[in-house]
Image 1 (cartoon, rainbow, N blue to C red):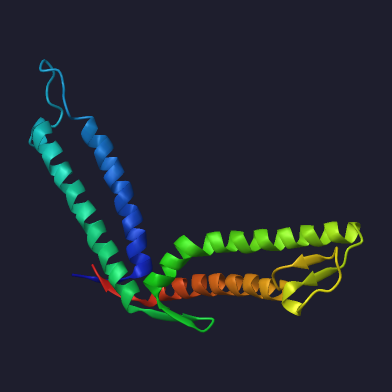
Image 2 (cartoon, rainbow, N blue to C red):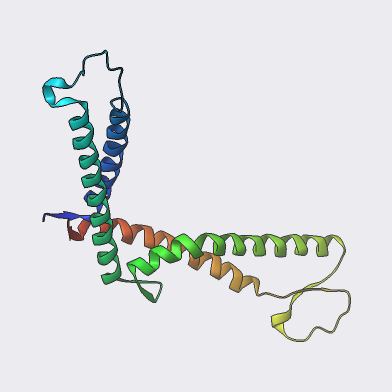
Length: 181
């Protein structure tokens, strides 16, 4: 078993996947031939032996990818990361980024855009704009915004900070964490 950094392991996975595709393409060229033609791989043991060896090589590369991915996952589960006061395993942060961050970012951007549009419409119509979080509203016909725009802007800012910090930490951790492959 050899040690490598996660960054190197990820690059090796990419290389292995490319090698697998090339091997599959080569194998497909030797799956059958006209019996009247001489086997072009006769001196190397024949096409059947070549196909068997290449299939085994493909299988070995696939298993190496599985072992490498598993080692990376184990390292990510064991590595704790704190970002903006929130601690999670790196694996949990990656899941959060993949499943939660994008939709949350879109939702916050949509909310901010809708509030801005409502505010513009209210100004054009001569209405006052009040946040319901400010307390009771006495005037009628005013626009009541049901979210603190300051809190919304802070949430957008925090999300951007978390994503930026996470990307930086991930690069650093992947470059410095070693795994056995």
